[in-house]
Amino acid sequence: MTLLIDKEIVEKETSKTATTYPIDPAMVVQGKHADNERLKIESDFLRGTIADDLNDRITGGFTPDNFQLIRVHGMYQQDDRDIRAERQKQKLEPLHNVMLRARMPGGVITPKQWLAIDKFAQEHTSYGSIRLTTRQTFQFHGVLKPDIKLMHQTLHSVGLDSLATAGDVNRNVLCTPNPIESEIHQQAYAWAKKISEHLLPQSRAYAEIWLDEEKLETTEASKDSVEPILGASYLPRKFKTTVVVPPQNDIDVHANDLNFVAISKNGQLVGFNVLVGGGLAMTHGDQLTYPRRADDFGFIKVDDTIAIAEAVVTTQRDWGNRVNRKNAKTKYTLDRVGIDAFKTEVEKRAGVTFAESKPYEFTERGDRIGWVAGIDGKYHLTLFIENGRLLDYSENDHAKQLKTGVAQIAKIHHGDFRMTANQNLIIAGVAEQDKAKIETLARQYGLLKDDVSLQRTSSMACVAFPTCPLAMAEAERFLPSFVTQVEGLLTKNNLSDEAIILRVTGCPNGCGRAMLAEVGLVGKGPDRYNLYLGGNKGGTRIPKIYQENLTSAAILTELDSLIARWSTEREATVNGEKEAFGDFVIRVGIVSEVKVSKRDFYD
Ligand code: SRM
Ligand code: SF4
Image 1 (cartoon, rainbow, N blue to C red):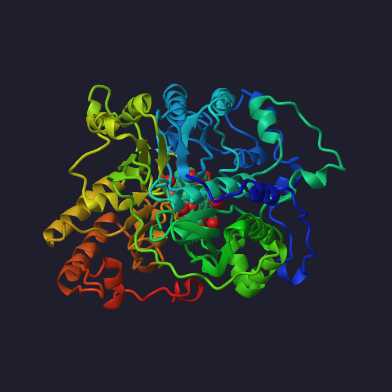
Image 2: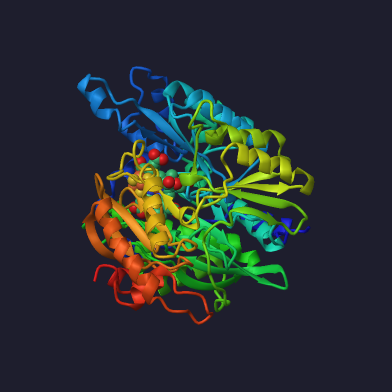
């Protein structure tokens, strides 16, 4: 099978380009820069004093600047919130540890790599779990300072890293994760990888600090060339990119700053429609923050992909708000300077003119749990992993040993694994003769069950307690029993074969993408959530607030009557299917439709 990516094109496009552009002051927010800007500039290209902190064993934590800087190296300092108060009572510092998030464009990981991360999670993390995330990678939670370097070296020894999975940089690049379903999927994945690599920080800080590589001094003369794309102060805020193959929108384009929507002709990838400026986070009570859909900039040919990716990133780098981090993401830059101005600048920088967008449609987002056949004669088994948490929940009962189960599969699997943006895991590239063995293991270890409802596989939650420092309410720990209750409501109304896209996030940052759900719960406080309704199946509509500050019991009461109405009043759609819940609540006026998020999200 040939990839459309031509080696020469890639080499030409990935060569270092001049990255300073004349900047119109009218496009830049004036004022005192946020403190994060100082620390990035002073960090000597992401080094800071991380190495010194690592040797300081008096505290388990990092100094405030390094607390931020380690994020670009893929780590967050955390502590277990369940035991925080108790430790405080005992006059102990919080039990500082780090969470690590790996870089894994398109979520692809080999069995050998899997076995290495499995072993590390088992031996060196306090939770003993591997957590699949909503952005096609995994996290370790609870790694203590003495093990941090070992963790990076372990990843490196199997060809993995965690560079730029957090912080003000381009994050892990997502890609529709069934790569052998068509040639387009494979080509899309190759582009996701290429974009990820092209936009990575070039600083050698990661290699020096974690892999003990030789330290290179940054001289005054070399400063300008260290980061040709990101610049010495990196991006104003996090930046997220995807490559997606319609009609699947399984990576949720509207949560991302930059999206390449694959357009094909006669089975070949001919280019991408480019969508810019999506993002879901908001702050309770601050109407200057809001979730926003990405805007369609137009169509580009495949050869222009890297140039456009770089131009969008450098435009956001130069025009993004460095004064107020709450308004620093690309979505706010677009609304401040105007879509046309941003797009024209991207065209100028890339030397590419957007053509009119090509038609496409997103119809679904869920993963197809179970086996699918690939075009290469191989098979792929998608496992539903509730909340993405791979953990051995019992010492003796195999059926509850999810983490061990995946490791057992890794030992005999000849293909690879693909993490999905719905926190699930695909065992990809299985030969016909190996299917039965793999399926037996998956069933034996509770990774594949016949009685999981469509509602459960359509539900998702962010991590929240006990590790997330920003959580206001439970999410991951709350979801399983809440779904059971929703299943009950569906059954009561003869809808047990149907599902509502249900998502819960422990705070308004939106990591579980509740702001693209048909029913979204956004945490406000202990057992308190704002209830949003009206997203759609394709993930192209933002839901609207229905009621605020409800307990979970009150939400179930609301859902009880809404689902009862849906079951009796729903209509057939034009293509004969029954109306989805998110469409229904808008048609009958339970909530109004959010069309232009900035204007009508808060009406
Ligand atoms: Fe997220 C911060 C977990 C996807 C928006 N997110 C966090 C932190 C690191 C908390 C912190 O800053 O200290 C959470 C760590 C929890 C923990 O203990 O693991 C966290 N985010 C996650 C993950 C693990 C949720 C999950 O259950 O899978 C996802 C990891 C993705 C990855 O692998 O890179 C995750 N985060 C998202 C998404 C969804 C997406 O990208 O598709 C969003 C919304 C989309 C967007 O960016 O608009 C999201 N996370 C945020 C934000 C708000 C950003 C903003 O624009 O204001 C924060 C807070 C921040 O950055 O200040 C945040
Ligand atoms: Fe934490 Fe909030 Fe993200 Fe959930 S949505 S993981 S609570 S930051």
